Length: 139
Image (tube, rainbow, N blue to C red; front, side, top):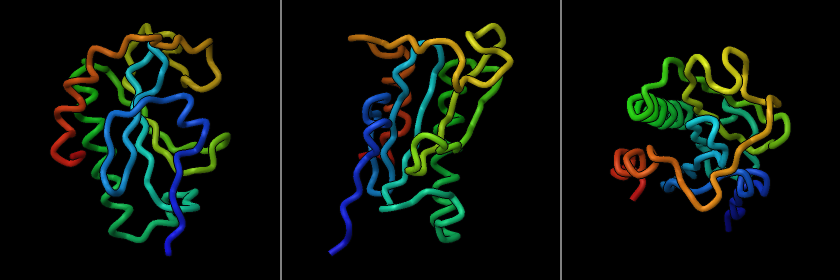
């Protein structure tokens, strides 16, 4: 019997569901300062991208690229920041952040800068369209 895969509690607390596939959780960060998506592979104990086999690495890259392309098109972002830091949350997860000059942290990184601004009961305007565009693989 395989080990159940759970979303790390910090990711669960800081993000909301976009959708999921058999391989990934797709989440959006609860910080209205930035359009921000997180892709989390559903593999037990996975910490690093290089721990995936070749096919799984490329499938993850495909999902990250799809999320990045759609998020950029929906938000008009000037620059897409993509990173897999994992210093606080060891579970492999990839951040995809739509950036523009003049945003709260431009031109620096978003991590550890300022105070997150939660969405409360609202959700990002781009979320329904992103969910729709990704739904073919998130059903």
